[in-house]
Length: 222
Image (cartoon, rainbow, N blue to C red; front, top):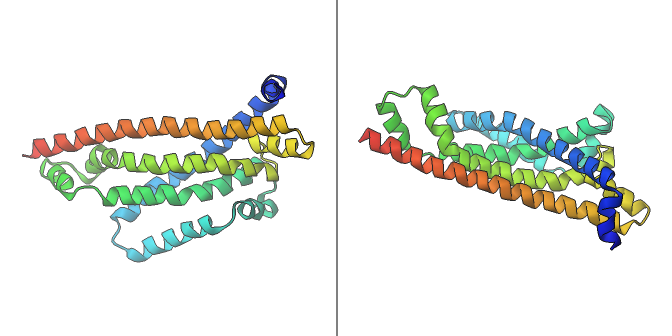
């Protein structure tokens, strides 16, 4: 019973930690999307291979740094708390979103692009009215995978004072409070599962719209 009662007894602490965990995750993913999606589009369209190579190498380097080491790197520069946690997780988020965006634009059927040109679409119209719509399911796939990872990695942010569900796990371990550790771990797992489910639904929705859009363009060009 104590494993269930802890949700009532510590509901304020648990809700605060959950909201903090969500805040860290959402901000890290949001900033990663703002940078990685336009950058991925640019890399897919540029003919300069050396630019692609440099950017992918840099983002790959971020992925090779262990999570705790990445968090610790920013302590002497920024200090402890929310900011270094968000920056570290933002850097971890870049590669999968960037890679999926790049691959999405590279995989667009040239026939659709040529048909749009023939229908008088300008480059910006093709980008915003056709290419992005076609690429969105692949981009969403990268965002979905990254978000689940970041929810898990955000538990480590507690080690630098950022709070979140990891703080309850660490606090519970310090006083051997097994129900509290259980509650925080279960919530982190459920948060990842629910987020994955919701983003999968969004991804499927965009996939259906993409298929319709591609078909419409091909029919109109005939």
